Image 1 (cartoon, rainbow, N blue to C red):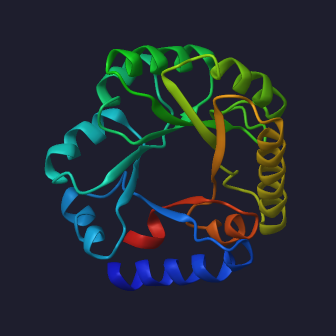
Image 2: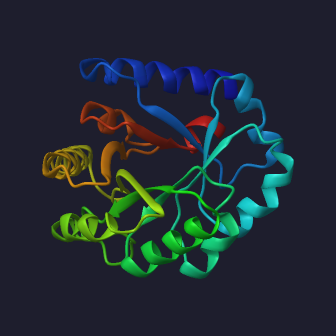
Length: 221
């Protein structure tokens, strides 16, 4: 079943992203999956996985055989950065300066630059992480001064109760915000990745130019 699900998701990605001329990266969301569930992904060509919680990631890491690029996609507490700074390839949920400063500090201690995405709360949901869209550009300019950060783009999580038309509008707004940030050409900010779209709406995200989609239940159901 996993093989069929992966192939189906890849077909949708191929079709919906065709106008953009590039295939979005598929990040398999593995927060509810065991290492035994995750390892077969490698042979199916899925080598990027996304985990939400630091403790769960730490428990799984020894069993993943070093096969995967791991993305931290959940909300991150500043005091947990030190535990994942060497193990993840990208942090998707940067949404406040205190976290940016801690990632910068830990990255410099480990003599690296940490790839990060700035999380945007595009729908203004009070219960979600991410910053309001009007705060993104000023925040990027501050992040550009932190040598341990490599800001590579934006991330968003869409409202669970939104309909398809509403979701499409949010994805379009994210694409427009991404383009505005890119046009600013802020030194040391590299607007390359737009991480948006999950199991129920990744097709819409692809149509609006997502470069990464985070898919879990559609793969493991």
